[in-house]
Image (cartoon, rainbow, N blue to C red; front, side):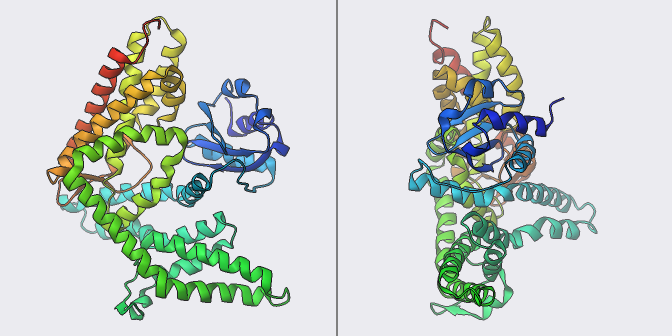
Length: 444
């Protein structure tokens, strides 16, 4: 049986050796490498390596798809072999690099969001049923504690990602959630603890990182250990109180208002657009940039109504893959790939199907997007009717999202699950039908 260490050991020479690796990171499914010379990669051998589900070459990263769970273990072993973790921005546009760096702040928080989201859903079920009344307060505390302090974790990760001292980033972001800010007035209005949420924490820690770097370059070395932390926290903390919390609070409120308006007035159209365009974002790795928006909605409203719409892209992908399996009866290699990747696709992990099936064939990627658009339109239509489906955490999709579903605006959990299931079935059906009819050229 191949271990994560075996996989990491095999990967290192295939990507050009230690000298060719500039930095290492990972998301839920991919090992992301910045390489000094991408031409040194042995792509054919890399794709044939056991445990590697696919490879995508972006303009600034080389991404190896390993799947959820496995990627974290392999990345840890890979970093141990390299004995370094540095970052460069080679061949990256400023926009793409900024989006990925912001995503890197939030990706490590996903496991806690999932765990707390599931516990929150369980607590809701117990409370509504009137079961175990002595346990529900404890479950509520366990499920809600992380969200009440998520700003601190965002600040810590922001400073770490942008080259500051992580604990200083956390200390500055903690100002956002400190109860005592209620005594502070900014722009003539008393502040509220948590105002600005994760966006305020991100901005505060980012400012703190730049203040810290400035101090490191100007404060005498003999006084650095005393003055730099104090000045960083003081300057950034005051700016957070008197500027950033108010500004970020305004932006956060606008995001919530815009999401609710979008779904209530143009739900079917918005769902079609979001569901139809999400697969290309996944292909480019830019879907992680949506995490701050999801986190803001969860923090404000208890759930994100955008994730169930975006999850329909995976349903279209599953339907398209099933049609390819039916049509290509004599392509044993492709059918084997589909059989191995389909269970992950049903659980919301789309990369194996994207890189192993739809993208290599071309047309099925487009018809899969059509299936995602149809599923998104189905869920969005119910949102227009006042029955919005939300998710209490981010990360899973497909069938794995059911435990995290929540009814928005008084919608019952059973109805929310039924609407979401209807969207999945619609995505499966349209993805299958469009691919069966138009997704494969006649010569295949």
